[in-house]
Length: 155
Image (cartoon, rainbow, N blue to C red; front, side, top):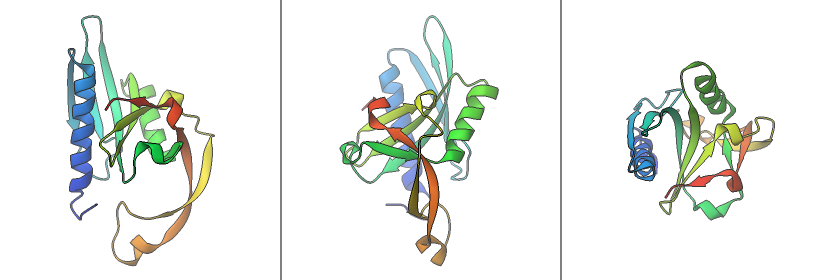
């Protein structure tokens, strides 16, 4: 459950980055989490193997369901654009969207595998940032589909 200081998000980001580090082992994987809930990119990481250095940009989401609940999950177009911009113009080699699910599983979607035109219009509640009646307002927004068969399970 979310609280007013976004601790849920920060805790989820830490778990995602630790799982990525564990999946990258025995190679070196260091990361930095942006604690700002308004940040364009949640986390940045560097993976080092004996042959190369890879720079990562990662958007993290905590989902209050299990990974098997749906066949596809949603990506906000603005998050896709931020990650794609970082990949194209900001020295980022790999850009991922990570979903941590309520059962502890973590899946990654490479934004190169997402089609920004494969979208769905959805009615959503505003839950990320806002106060009072703003949170109960439902709005229609377009979301990019992240099909589960294109995801990488890391935990």
